[in-house]
Image (cartoon, rainbow, N blue to C red; front, side):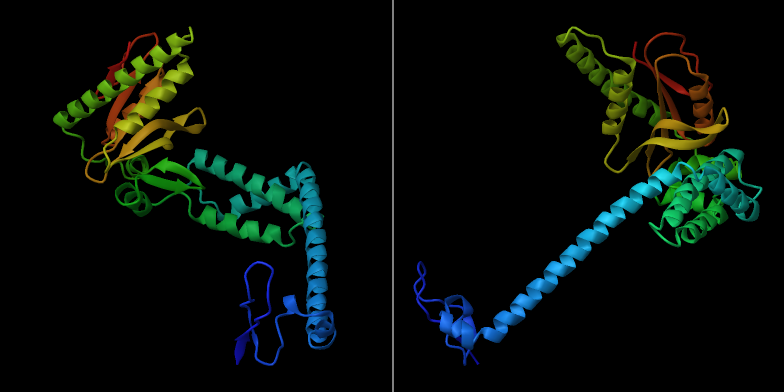
Length: 323
């Protein structure tokens, strides 16, 4: 059974706090005598709980400070664990990485493994996170076994997962990998679709570029190459239809020196071929190579050019000249 306190308050009339039926009032409105008799045990228990809470809080603060110290020590120690990390990474590569993995992916895996193991070794040696090396090695073994990507993974990513193939935490162009693995590209876009897309992008790009130059003129300045590139990228992203998915900086399996290159913009669509766009202020052989690869993969390759230089492009690559 419960009842309400009923003692008078200074502002709200009678107290309406619910209390056990045997209590004379709530503890807030108890007299000193009632506190010493009726509520003495409860007050003692409350003080014990408060004291226990303070002790737990102090222990938590001490553990937190200790964790910060250990983390800082581990970060400093990681600067000296490169040799140990390299040795562990070599074992993983030798035992778990397939010889079929392309050299650029193998190099990325080596860099990933060495970096993660460097910190894992430091975490164990400083006591920051015991057992970290074994955990990281297990995760890296799973990554190594998943390389290179399979045709099934690339096909699913190209058709159902938004056009992005996740490889070691980085976004790769799924349709490009599917062509790289099978030699078969998507259905090429119809000429009417290419013309319509180019027309939409040209109008959008020129409108945004005029706006950029107008803003630059207001501050008596010229738009930089980086600024024009950023504006062009945003214009292409905004021009994408709602059912499409614009993607930036996807890795493509085309060698640039010893690493794979990246595409400026890919517009993925579940109902047609991807649109691949490169944006350059000068003639760039690497962009021409990536766009030729995109053309062979069945995508719609578009080269947006501004600045100076020739506009030579591979066969099948459409050029939008903003000059």
